[in-house]
Image 1 (cartoon, helix red, strand yellow):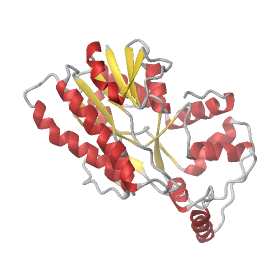
Image 2: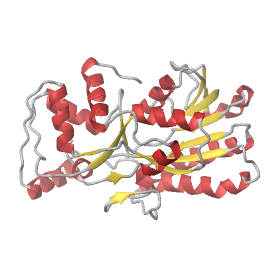
Image 3: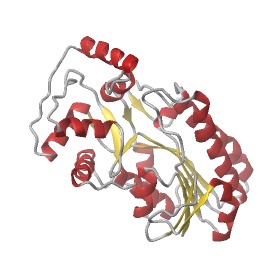
Image 4: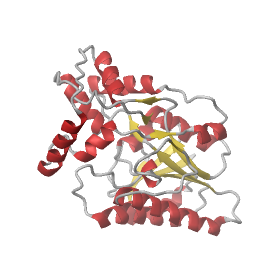
Length: 318
């Protein structure tokens, strides 16, 4: 199968290319420089040249990540997350490719979750990241009318929660560095439940979408189990054979420190505190129903252990 992947330099693109090594993988990026795991890469300005390879499936990963420091310009999210999606989806409609897989985000549906997030929720994103992802989704859904008579085309809008794995950046590295340095975990008073998904489970789902005849639609991506951030810390300490120091400081004190962190651009700011301590439970029942499975291959705990070991061994896929 000939597969075109955008956003090839991110850790998701790198890992998916490895997982799909039995196929012929082509890349689309800001430059046409060579990339391991890809037969050939093209810049966005060279998109028309890709037609020569008779692409079967497009996996659209390219996008602007959520900036926890809130230093990015508002419009830049829409230029990238929405604009590039429109460009590659229009190309898909004119191509012979039969499957289009778009990586959106749960943030396109909801910034905060009350109860359990399902695909039926009325989207209400907050902030340019989620709003730009939702606008991209809406463009795809509006454009689907153009292929009503093309039964060979299938379109999947995937809404993953936080993906982790080799090459992962962000809050997990922050926690990992804290454990390595023996820094106590000060947020033990926050008893939250969050959904995550390992890159192994993401790759498994992608393979199934490629191989099976799954109905087009929106699908949440999440591991089967939820974990609190404190549980993640405990798994990390155990995996690294480190003593786990968990302190239960007053929540209001921590919130004031995070407010100060936002003002002074410190590692613990309000956005990061929210990510680390809020409840955000995502249902994966729909995707499992259509894949006809009861469970994903890797448990949430085992997925984290694998990711943490990749940090420890220095396995970084970039």
